[in-house]
Image (tube, rainbow, N blue to C red; front, top):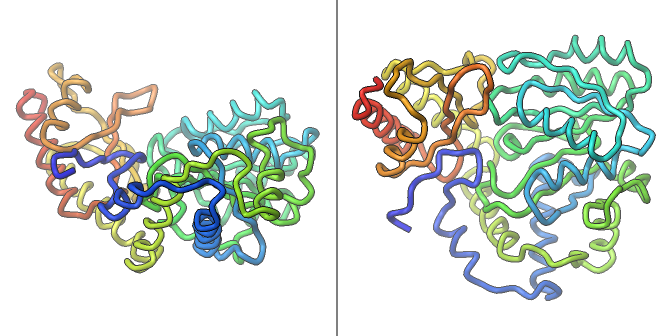
Amino acid sequence: MSNAPILLTPGPLTTSSRTRQAMRVDWGSWDTDFNRLTASVCEQLLAIANAAHSHHCIPLQGSGTFAVEAAIGTLVPRDGKVLVLINGAYGQRLAKICEVLGRDFRTFETAEDLPVTAADVERLLNGDPHITHVALIHCETSTGILNPLAQIAERVARHGKRLIIDAMSSFGALPIDASQLPFDALIAASGKCLEGVPGMGFVLARKASLAAAEGSSHSLALDLHDQYRYMARTGQWRFTPPTHVVAALHEALAQYAEQGGLAARQQRYAENCQSLLQGMAALGLRSFLPEAIQAPIIVTFHAPDSPHYQFRDFYERVKLKGYILYPGKLTQVETFRVGCIGCVDSQAMQAAVQAIGTALRDMQAL
């Protein structure tokens, strides 16, 4: 693995050798030892959000989007209505899920560099009494913007509505405390800030809401109520689990604890982000977002204003130097993205900036 490039993406991302090593063992999907592994992972995920008393953790095979669809399909009744708050591509995807599932919804969209505000939510809830749930992307991965979760959660709770949080790119690195911040569902995945490998989503679902969701799901495979009930009774997954992914996540969580948990993970990512922003500014590359709303997860940069710049050529040149970047996801301006998460530190970020600068100078784009 010494020649493998460093993944500066929002997931999959660079993992530690210990995490990769954990995947070298084969597990029986009904084996008692594997069942203990699953139970331990769920217990640790609940602990990160201080949610063991109020929520159940339901793991699910597949990417994070599978878990988002499962949460909407299970926890939003068929006669419910979702207010989807959008300022990027993943908010748009959440609205598309509601549409495909036949759940009534309305959207509120702000610009990609403008957070949704609690005042927006207050006004929207006052104007539409049919809304039962509010769905929010905590950190919108298409730009790296951070939405004001705590303030929005307070307004949602005050109106007696239920909050669904897509915390895919924030869980484990940015604090979310279930004892302080009310939510019906928090959705995340194995291959993001926890530094596992992709292949397992999970939902932290409020116990009372999950208990009331029997028969709500549109799907057999994505029915969180049935998945949890089966696991609680047998200790097993209903269908073939991603055994190696679970084992890798279990090992990644062990390292997460050893390294100091959420506070340490947040600090390392913040240092990575600061090193990246400072280094790119020195190259003359502008970030898309102001620092005040920039999450330390992934940073969007304006592409160089040069006729010699082509992202594919730039990408391949940086890859040859040992780093994988991410294309931009904005529609109005040309951008590229650099992730700050994974098993990397600020020195790696500084080296990546050097590689980016060299690649752009070689292209005569800087």
